[in-house]
Length: 403
Image 1 (cartoon, rainbow, N blue to C red):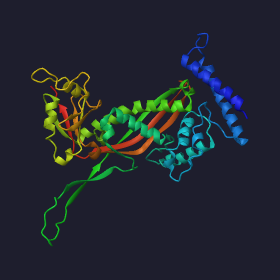
Image 2: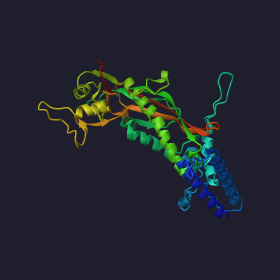
Image 3: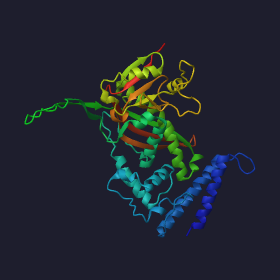
Image 4: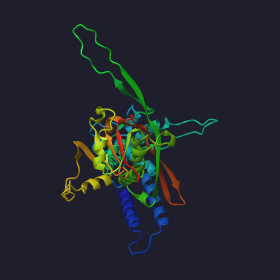
């Protein structure tokens, strides 16, 4: 029941999307955005009403867009929407669809509503009541789905090897990591002699907290997108907005006094060099306080260093590395080499970042929606809290001395 009318509505919405993309009608005349917007709102309202009427009659309610039902393939796989752990809901396809539909102000199915309600229970735990000395804080946003959160980190990792390799955790409230500073070496003992006690000195690595936020404006014209298209668009914009800040702070953040992460360069062994970067890297390998810090180490270099090394010639005028159709610079002195575009010109970092740099997610990324009728757009603001710090003097940071 109602299927014929639903199909007609979806066909008309597809025609509207095509008109919006072109900006002109079949006769080449400019379209009237206000009229198109009003028609689209009426169609969405009618489609929502049909869904409610169908549900009341016991029919399976379909999604508001013309894309296939994302849950149909999983009904026979024993998938359960409900979960005793609220954050587990963020990984379900029901929540992902509910997340997008809520931002687009579209109706939800019963499963989507349950998933959203469970997730909102988690969001509500961040509420802070107002008092005489502080304003209230109510995080009314929606946490982005788990797979979107992971995709965001993976995409940034593809661009920045440094960000990819640092150790990441997600423990709310954790700002200190204990680490072993010194330990006495094992000793030989005679038979029946008492084994000497091992002395270990532990220290705390205190992480500096950074609040990261980005606003993504979306015009009402773009909001005619289907749910799946909207998620892809939002993910692309979110990645672009947060990429620069998160990676730059991981490398160059100055610490909590500036509301930034404590970056790698802050607590690394700093080495200013003159001359070529290749010579400087050789010297920097001898700057480590302990040889154990070199275990599993990588060499991260700026793009300018890669270019300098690629075009370096020997005494006979031959390139050390073939710059044309070559395999690139994969290692120096047996240590793997990767270029990171976020390193400043002439900078390099040597160390085992997966072991010695800690990054923690305190508040996973959530999104709120602000409507602006005057501008005919909606602003989506993403927000998250991260902290990070390097175990002191475990990494060498090379920087070219200014002339």
